[in-house]
Amino acid sequence: MTRSPLFLAALASSAVPGLDPVAVEGVSGEPGDLFEIAYVQDGQDRRWVVKAPCTPAAGAMLDDISSLSGLLARRLDVAMPMVRGFAPVPEGRAAVYLRVPGRPLDFAGLEPGALSAEVGRTLAHIHNVEHLLFEEAGRPTYDAEAHRRRQLSELDRAAATGHVPTGLLTRWEHALEDVSLWRFAPTPVHGTFTGQNVLASFDDDDDSSSGHVRGVLAWEESRVADPADDFAELASTAPPATLDAVLEAYAASRIERPDGHLVRRARLAAEMAPLRRLLHALAAGQLDVVERTADELRSLDEQVEADDRRHAAEDAERTERTRRARERAVAALDPDDPEQPERPDRPEPEWDATQPHVPFPMLGETQAISMTSVLDDGQTYAAPSGEPAAAPSSPAHVAPSTPAQGFGVGQADDWAGTADDTSQGTDPVENPVQQAFENPVQQPVQNPVENPVQQPVEESQPVPVVAVDSDASPFEIDEVEALPEQADGVLDLHEGASDFIPVTGHGHQHHERA
Image (cartoon, rainbow, N blue to C red):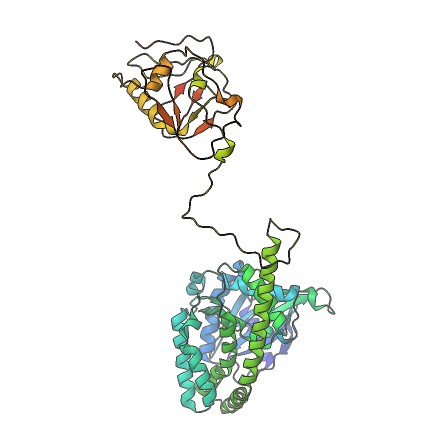
């Protein structure tokens, strides 16, 4: 560290009023780090973190993160650093915030279970944040094509240094030129989602499954870009079963469905991480870091083929597990064969929306009802000519309807036309339905409801109904719909009818047309 822990404690005391340091602990760093960090404890037994930038670029990043924390902290289920004060330094401003409780995780030793599922849900909550929030905080935004071209540019710059093996350059160039691999929906990403930056607390120190994610640190490289960037360390270091558990919890909590190439791009991001460190070290003039990173790249070139074989075996095993899980789910949801959940070969029922389907209810289970059955049970109420039709004034004259009394749906237009002509006071054209209402029924008609099962209508056919008047012409009903048992005295034959036809009970004297 170029600054001593005591100096950083003094910065914390000047940044936060009332902070009186009583102890300080420095954090050892590595060459190329962007920040210097120290832990400070004050007289009220509070633990603080002071973070000072090492370069002007790091100072600008720290200023942006302070505004992001104020917008983002209320939208996450885990804690993140909340800046309480700033202290000026030559590279910008040092930030001071309360220490987030928890211990860092080691993704290489993380086992599948509740903790790995919480890691996946935490990532999903970060990726579900609105883009505008990151843009308002001044974070960079890249769509899929811009993100791909940005990495191609970094690859060209690294190739010009001569420190990257030719095999890796060819490998990465082919992957970046495969456009189908880079079709993803940009999301807000953390940028450095590593085990060191994920803090967890444990109910039992000897049981890793009792852990809970408490906070996420180091948001300096957050941006709107590829969600696979946050899976880089998980895809490269975590066991395959742990990665599957994280991905399962992640997909269940995401608003949008993850794309199919997320794991492949995450592995590519992990491979290209040393390349970015090489470019940063060259820009900062840190030659020792450049040599160390070049050696790392040469070692990577020798082991990528073995990694590819291992990843191919893991992907095949993951695909097989997914297939078996889907088959079990389909068999478990099969209502026709609940006793055999292990039958994955059941074909899906064919369904063609262009073909006619069985109507509801089944026409074979219903019976057409003629119009005359309604006329037998009561007399109608007709309004005088020139006056609009109106229902009886008292509901006591309303005859209760029975399921045997009904009207076909196909009569709606006829009823509407009759009501309109009557209400306008004009001489309407003779209508057999109107005449049937004006003249009482003089001859009994056999009620087909008495034995509705004898002649079921197997297909939808028009049923002719003839009025009592011999001169009247028959008309047809397409379907018949039984009236409810409790009627309010007014029959609404169709939603599109322009008027209602009142029905009166027995013994009520109807008004003759004037």
